[in-house]
Length: 289
Ligand SMILES: C[S@@+](CC[C@H](N)C(=O)[O-])C[C@H]1O[C@@H](n2cnc3c(N)ncnc32)[C@H](O)[C@@H]1O
Picture 1 (tube, rainbow, N blue to C red):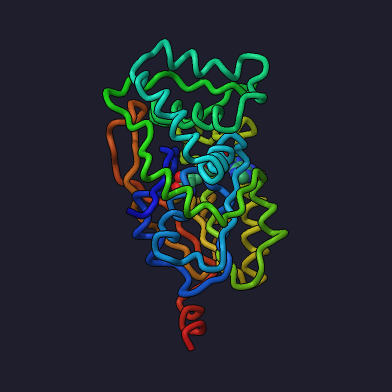
Picture 2: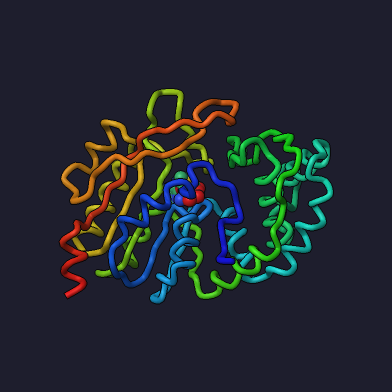
């Protein structure tokens, strides 16, 4: 079985893969995913054999990137650490004990594997798989109370480790991609979205948050890369502001996404999202001749 995302991630693109993959450039060189999260498109491209020229995956969330490094470099130790957490999957007291590690001195001195196993265990057992930090940078999502959460799928972890072996993993702000990307590279941006209302959107993936100034910076990086003849694809909310930031791009359309739509997280609905591409169909024709 091809590797799938090993984390549940808010805004994960699993549901939207058919929409994304039907708009990929026909060919591209290196792949960059600067808002990595669960990495749904990366795993899909890898399974389709589309990463022959390598991939760079990055995110500003260091704990998240450390999970990928642990999967890549220490997969058997990580599986063992997760299997040790597994019997406690529905134990609220144990959840809060593990969650409290980052409130104790020496947290960062714990091994990469121990911290990654904690992140994955909390991701699988916390409320809705959210990742949220308070202003002291402590993970503060409550217990999810799931009857039978999947803590670890060893075969999937091993396969994820295999496909990550040659991948460059970085903790950095998305704008750094502009220092590396070359003509012909493909960049997929999946940022925290422009809020659809003053209260409705979740953008607290990191302690810094993601605000209007970041959306403007991102639109600028998008244009820079497009002018350099990179293939750039971006997801965002279908809001007037996001449409305005990317108007005039060759592909600028609304796609329908199935999303959790209320705070109990159980009800799903279909909502409109924006998909922008810096390349039109003519670039695919150009590449084929
Ligand atoms: C919508 S999620 C990406 C979801 C991912 N595509 C998936 O399929 O799971 C957005 C990600 O952006 C990251 N992020 C937030 N601000 C960032 C920044 N300034 N630079 C890089 N990454 C950032 C968050 O940590 C989060 O993982």
